[in-house]
Amino acid sequence: MRERVLVAMSGGVDSSVAAALLVKQGYDVVGATMKLFCHGEDLPDRPCCSLDSVNDARRICEQLGVPHYVLNLETAFGRDVVQDFVSEYARGRTPIPCVRCNTFTKFRDLLRKADAIDARWIATGHYAQVRNGVLHRGLDPLKDQSYFLWGIERGVLARMLLPVGAQTKAETRAVAHELGLELIAEKAESQDICFVPDGDHTKIIARELGADAPSLSPGSFVRADGTVLGRHDGFARYTVGQRRGLPGGFREPMFVVEIRPASREV
Image (cartoon, rainbow, N blue to C red; front, side):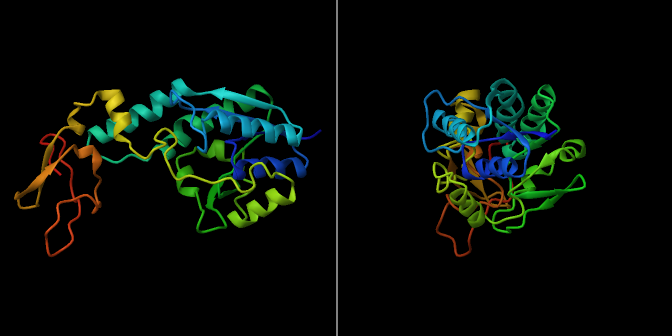
């Protein structure tokens, strides 16, 4: 009897090739696309959550001859990821929502669905590797995504398959062509946060807390000695270590070293 595996499919080349490789290896593959966030309007050319991406995943599953499901995780994602994202910026910190999503939302719900359909394994298109239940870096140092998976519990890791983790991105695209997955073989990838598709995270903060939220309200740029250098339009627009967008005219480059939410100073 073939072992069943539930594959998280975003509609991109990595997860599509992961599913195809598992089919080729003889697994009983089931595809699942996670609907995490509704943008209010469809956004084509986005890596996940858009209608086009869901349809691409469905069409790949049809091509592979495997079933496809859509999992609605919007409520959990909003509670566990988006709200944390907003509150972290309000505290003057810069969150990494992909890590939190993988730790508290995506993989836990994927595992629940796997249990519901009697799947022994779950799989994704991440560039990382799992050996004996221990997370390792992916083979391709330029695409390694193990950092984004560090918070996943060992019990979950023990049931994970990462088929593309032992190859390079170029090899993944080559496999896509080899297996006839032309729909996604050269599909562009994005580095954007999935719920911030235009790169402007302040829109999410304004939507959740209001445009007059303290983290989006004017404050001062100050030197470590307290000298005021100028004004800013909200400390949520800055992160420790940032250089771009700071007051100019100084001999030495200026970097953000601290954000003080109480006084709105950067």
